[in-house]
Image 1 (cartoon, rainbow, N blue to C red):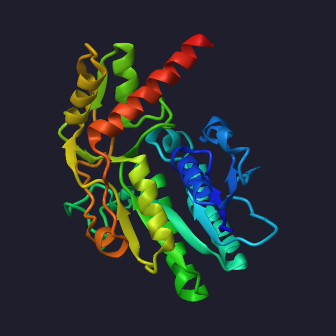
Image 2 (image 1 turned 90 degrees about the vertical axis):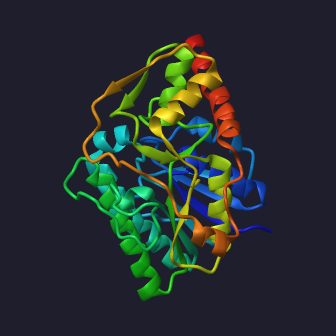
Image 3 (image 1 turned 180 degrees about the vertical axis):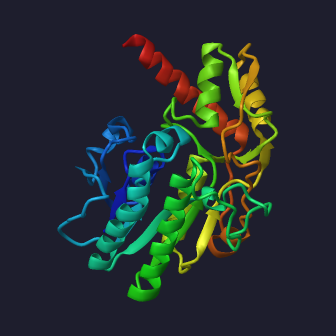
Length: 316
């Protein structure tokens, strides 16, 4: 018999893939989401499994009967569009939501995994980014509501480990893509794919020389599950170290979609990171993990998903 695992933010992009993977390995999943940015369609296919959904805002107290073996805290707006439109809820779920999720883990003596982010490094002065780097974050900039929410969540998680003895894990997630991403969530890959499939211009903010490192969702989930089973309590970067420019990913998507779209430029948002590349040495050593899905393979699968999603919208 498997574990009983709670996932907050389970109807989101990454949360739904985590729920699916845990069910496939024989675990029971309790999914919690207030559906502010999550989509019930992401988890509808899981209803006939050992899966329970609770609609709840984890910024409020979490009450759950029965044993829990692990709490995976994924609840949070995660795209710039979302956290710029919802700055206060973003801060609340990073602070109050993390506190409540940790409280559930403490009450159940469960393991705890925090979904942190490469955004804790801000606009980094160290490249590539190692887990020992403290970051370069503007706390009062427009992105600060997300960056500082995650940095506070890491501090809270570490405090619960040190003072309450909870077995906590922190995964610092770098740019991830794949099926179930929201087409209009403001992130580069789904934006570019949707624009290319519609024959629209691809919008790049800035000159396109800023870099990102794109990790396919199945590789990320594999890393998270390995971290869940590990003995480490230190933060671990999970991402693909193959760095490329934003213009480069746009050009790749145009080729793979066969689109005649052009690239156009708009001003770079405030505090947008100029570089982003994970050092995954710790993940390789501790988790025996590294990404395996090539960018072409991952983008091909994601393009197929977005194409179907756009077709569904047109048929409605």
